[in-house]
Image (cartoon, rainbow, N blue to C red):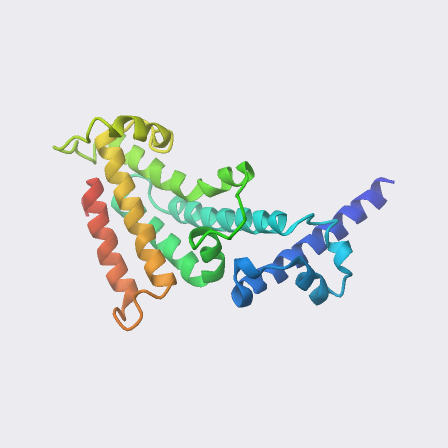
Length: 230
């Protein structure tokens, strides 16, 4: 019975993987809003009712694709950061930035699912949260490490009082840093993803040709916002 159950689990895992692979190809041709379980079933040669045993609804399939995407991006960022000397904070920052951009450029349709327009009618469940913060957790850890090491000097300016409560949800991502540094980290974080969004969604077409070089320059400017000396 154990061997039989193991075989069934293996078959189920293989079919689930095939379904998600086909669904990712659909993202490229139809977009997230056009994702269809029936179309996936047709491509697999399955009756449409059979696929619902693996994914009860389109939203369940979307959730799996979203979690897979966040995990893939997070793993790429974690691996890149781990390969750097942990006390070389400017290098870690640039390596993390390039890891985000490289993954997004290599997987534009999956990136669009994560950071593009919301899918009409879809509400991401709590299940996506742990995967969603993997990449930014690495960024937050870098800023916390640099602050503890004395690399980041306290900014002369202080955030407005009304931002204190707004910072509460972010302090776990950058533990131990003052709010003035936290908000500079958020500014650099949005600069990174703002750039990547512009590139992936074609806003730089016919404007910037050497995007990698300009990206690197822009991320060095963002590092100076945090207070990381280059």
